[in-house]
Length: 120
Image (spheres, helix red, strand yellow):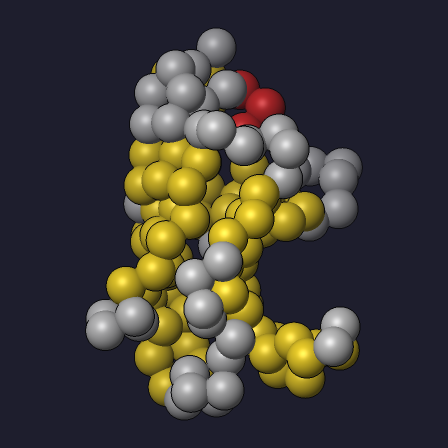
């Protein structure tokens, strides 16, 4: 089992910055993909950014150039640095740890989320 705890969400004005953290505990040795998702009212949960165990990152087009995902492997923390925030970035941000091999997900863990609210 893996437990995930997100933090760092806050109320911020457009143009501001936030750094989200996801602290993992438990058995993470088989995890090979870590990601941040965003949930907004009326929309499906969407992937914002993800990073592999090897350090390869990818981003949704809406956040490219503004958000950076990173990982502190020793501390088992995944970060999401968010800059130039826009009102449309508002939502609950969830951390996800999983194991994906050849497109098949065998492990899937979620945190409880942290709220980011960006005002115009």
